[in-house]
Image (cartoon, rainbow, N blue to C red; front, side, top):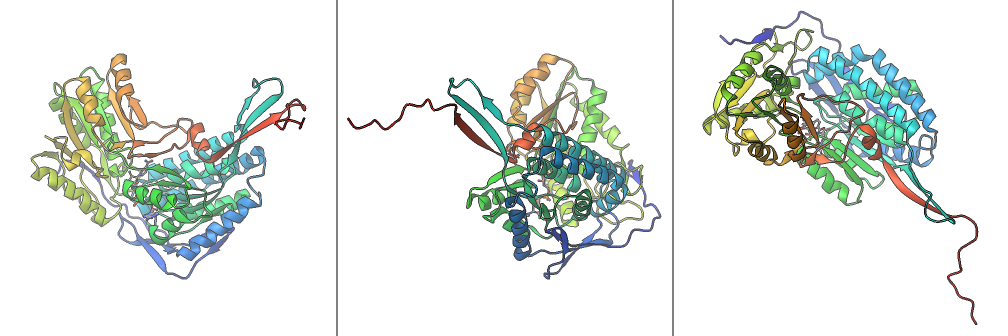
Length: 507
Ligand code: NAD
């Protein structure tokens, strides 16, 4: 008998199947190329049916965004006017958080309390972006000489394609869209075909908040052809993408034909390094949170820990003990902390990593198999801890994207940093030590977009986020997140008619 904490199915009636259509030029549109049904990963029944867009649907949406940008209906409004709309959207998101969270949970398999937290938290991203809309400014040069003055202007980059994944559908959309809108851009959004509903619900809220038609357009469907069209169409000025590194590479290649700007938020294989002098109880709790949050289907998943060899055995034992107390099960039950795996294929991929590690000589200290939740479908996976891992194993190098922790050991800071940096990815990294010098030396040496010291996965709208190496290009949120959606124009001005003529009069 497994010693785990499992929350069985609640007896509830699920809502009616939701129907999603594209949103183009301020109106709902179906297209005529069929529908995509989404089966809930936890409950095994169809929960939404969404239009399967064509290249033509994507082109119509791009044309609407292009026209809306070029006539200035949004880009030429004052920052105050744009902020007013963004603030109204934030209020509407909060007012609709419960119904949005319910469909997000049914489509993604994530716990309802987490979905509610993400949607309410996203409202704060919209509020922060509103503050940037009012304070965005360029630069001035007033020391170029008596007769010269230059200003560096910030202008919206233009039409932005936004392509999002299934793991944090509404949160990731809100890391991009309000910032693009604050800058004055117009957008075409393609949500993941697995989790489109909250993006479509947002369209209704944008209209209610007074956003002019055509400023935000949504096209539903698969990466091919919808995403690919958004990445390559010459009328698009920038594409911002969050998803897998493989698809990100393809998007950069597609965008290169017209040299549009590309921002990419990709995968990670994020390490937490634990020194013997750390607050080990807090570290163990953060490790468990870091690996099981969103069933490990998280770009920031703390999927590998690198533990000092003196404490490795006792620390791993404590992690296993805590893992047994994490509540896996029905995502609709507010007591649940970890829900379902997004698709059966993905569940098989996770299991294949664990099987390969076992074959390569690693030890599965806990889990390593599917999890049965009474009353629900088969798409759950046990909390899994794999020890005896060597740095060359696939499970130590690749993004498993599941509730699977790998444990490596080290002796010195240099050795730990070598293990941290010996990776294709560079999204985030963490260090646990009570010694400030250890933490700072680690923070300087780690190749990562974010370094957490004595904490994991804390984030704020003010603090920018992104990856190095194959984890991405560019930054989101914070002031830098706004900057990504702006072009820079230098304006150089002469004061008075003081310039000596270049053409010399004929003598
Ligand atoms: P994915 O790359 O399969 O899909 C992401 C989006 O791209 C979807 O909307 C999909 O339809 C679209 N797409 C697929 N093929 C395309 C193509 N050829 N052209 C254009 N668009 C295409 O990723 P996923 O499985 O939805 O999400 C999981 C991945 O996302 C993981 O690798 C994870 O690490 C990454 N992720 C990164 C961050 C971050 O901030 N760095 C955040 C969340 C997720």
